[in-house]
Length: 290
Length: 280
Image (cartoon, rainbow over the protein chains, first blue to last red):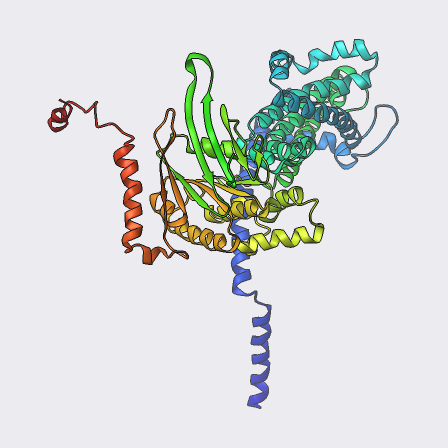
C-alpha cells in the first residue's frame, strides 16, 4: 500500500522538474521581460496619459475637435475596411496610402540614383564642387511646394508633377551627404586601393561606395522623411487618389475625425519608412551606420 | 648605378612652393640588399614616414629617385606593400575579405580561385588569425588588426615590405609579442623589410641595420649602425647582452646627444632660478 501511495508522488515531482525551464532559459526570459518592460511600458503610459488629456479637453459636445472616443466611433468604417473601393476617389485608406507610397517610390528612386551620382561627382571633383555646391545650397532651401507650379507648367499633368516634387525634395540631402562621405574617405583607404592598384571601377565599388555608405544612408534617411512630408502637401494641391488629398477632401466635408485618423496613419507610415531605410543601411554597412 | 636590390638615390622632398616651401628631406642615399631588415629611426617630424612613402610610391620625390630590383619606382604597387600604424583595414570587410581584396587583385593572373583562397588562409594562419576569419575589424583587438594588416601585406609577396611604425599604437606586451612574430616570419620568408620606428629596443632587436635620421627640416641620414647580433634573437637573453646594450647606447646617444630634439630650456619660467642661471 505504501509503495502505491509514494509512486505517483515521485512521478509528479519528475514531471514538474521536466516542465520547469532550465535556469539559463529562465534567466534569459527574465532578462527579455525586463527589457520589454523598460522599453514598452513608458510609451504606453505616456500615450494613455495624452489620450486621457485629449479626451478630457474635448469632452464638451460643442468642442471644435473630436475626442479620441468620437474619432473611433466616427471612423470605425474606415478603420475596419481599409481596402474598400466605391469607385472614383472613394477608396479605403489603405488604397489612399498605397497611392501616395507609389508616388514616393518613383520620385525617391529617381532621387537616389541622381543624388548618389551627383554626390559622388561633387565629392570627387573639386571643379564640380566649386561649380555646383553654391547652386545646391540655394536650391535646397526652396520649399517643396514651391516647385509644384513650375513642374505643373512643365509637365502639364499632375502625376509626373507630384513625382517631380518628391524627387526635388529628396535629392538635396542625398547629394550633400554622399559628397561629404566621398570627401571624408580616409587617406588610408585610398592608399590601400593605390598599393593594390584597383582600377577606377573597382575603386568605386570596393572602396568609395562602402566607405561613404554610412553618410549616404544618413542622406537617404533624411530624404525619405522629406519625401513623405512633401507628398502629403503636394497631394492636397493636385487632388486625385492619395492620403494628402484624402485629408483635404475630409476637411472640405468637415469630417474632422477622418483627418485625425489619416494623420495617425501618415505618422505611422512615415515612421516605418524611416525605420526601413535605417534597417537597410544597417545591414548594408554591417552596423557602421545609424 | 648600383647592383643593390633597393637603392634610394639623392632623394629630396619639398612640400609647398615659393617662400612657404618646406624642405623635408635632403640628400637621402641608402642601399638595401635582398633579405635585409632595415630600421629607420629618428625624432618625430623628421621625415621618416616621408622616406617610406617615397619608397612606397605614395609620394613623389622632388629630386632623386628610388630603384627597386632594377626598376624605378614612380607609383604605388603591390611589390612594395605597406603596414600602417593604424592598420588601415577596411571596416566593412571581414578579416578574410580584407586579405582577399588584395590577393584577388594582385594574384589574379598567377593563381586560380582555389589557390587564391588557400593562399589567403595560409597568410592568415601565419600571423595566427585563422580563428577570426569572419570577424569584422571592429570586433578584434588592436594587435589582431595589425596581424591582419601584416598578413595582407605579406600575401602580396612584396619585394620590399614597408612597415610604418607598425606597433606604435599597441601596448608594450602586445608589441613585444608581435615583434617576436615578425622575427619568426622574417626567419621563414627572409623578406626585405624597411621599418619606421621610434622605439630603440624595437630597432635593435629586429633589424640588421639601423638608419638614424637627423632632425628636420632638410633631414638626412645621420648615421648607419650595423647590428651584428646573431639570429634568432631572444629578447630576454639580449637584455643582459653587452653587445646589445652597446648598440642600444649608440642609438640613444645619437638621438639624445647628437640630435637632441628639444633645445635646452630657453624659455624657462622665471620662477626657477636654477634654469635661469643655465640660460645666462
